[in-house]
Length: 120
Image (tube, rainbow, N blue to C red; front, side, top):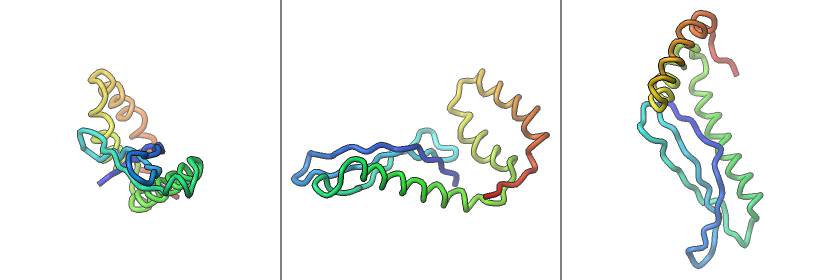
């Protein structure tokens, strides 16, 4: 199942006895109607500052994204377009944009670059 992660954000949670930093990001699932919010505990406010919490979140997201990319190594651009872009991204666009993007993909991208494989 294809996933795409956003950059994420950090916020302090102060609605408890010991305040902590919460990391939030969206995960876009292939064919899913809406992105899902994911959260994680990054550390307590009295132990780390907001910059450190942001660094921890970025490290986590980069590891997650590299895991997703590594599982997709060796697929062609056509495979990627079919599984992620056309089925995952385009349904969220307006119909006129979908038509325009599909035409660009079919006329220009697939003929020239479609058989190329992902490299890392």
